Length: 416
Image 1 (tube, rainbow, N blue to C red):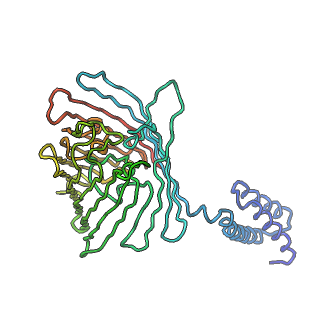
Image 2: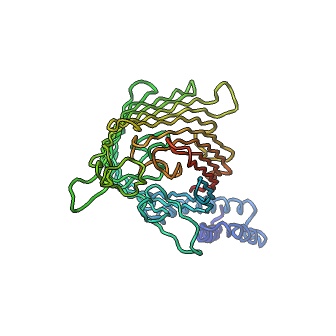
């Protein structure tokens, strides 16, 4: 290139670097070079060479500058959340029907503060009443009043090895206590305490795991006999890609300590009580849970079919101490994208003293025990992370046919 062109090249590079962060100015460099060609200062071949070198240098400079604009700690933070809008209709014999709109909003943040240690916290809508452990729904009411936002979880997680992890604080349950349904545990419950998970490859495609933990149910400064939960859950999960099949089985022993004679926050009064109003029995149930799925069975146009179930037995009471659930799922394993779908049917029976009445699904006969229920669910993905859901419960008491309850919910879910 002619030496007299170098000042011109330098001018073009300078302009390019000034506007590199805004593509709206890219055409102005072309206009400048075209004018120089028209004036006879540059030949067309020189102009082409200058434009090529200018764009390469601008791209190189932009690549070097951009990362320094973002602090390192920002790259360690993840935000996630969801919004759900719901209409609910509930009818129960002898009680006025309920129709209401509800909203749920959850926002979570987590950061990997050092290698193998993550800290996270989340906020959620919902009231601060004693029953809010099982619901982050907020009714639309009170003439456009502002609504409550509460601490949903706050935890640290430490994963020193691939086969071991631990969590402490208030945290999400599903990783550290697996269940295929909400027969015993409402999906909104985030326990408080500490838990551990251990994993080990038994053979090809088969992994053994063990979850255990100590969770705090209540605390009183004037009493050392506070209610707590200690549990252990061994299990096995398998995935056979060549067969398109997967399975998971777990057995859980629960030790609800210091609950006999106690009155728990959020109790519905479904469990048996003594003369003082406290719980009449110990709660040390054993639960067995399983799920088996297969992809595209018999070449049907169904992505996956899965059967799942749970059984629970509490040995202290002489009767009304069992519970079980059977379910069937058709469709995608999870509905996360456009046109994905899932159909689900669940039959559940949970007797009076099989489990504590403060923990089961809040939508199934208000969340108590002494229930028998049928549930049907339809989910359909409208777009990536946007889903509509229709959920219907028909429930009743185990030993009473006089108070059936029907609940219909239609929801729109948005995740980010």
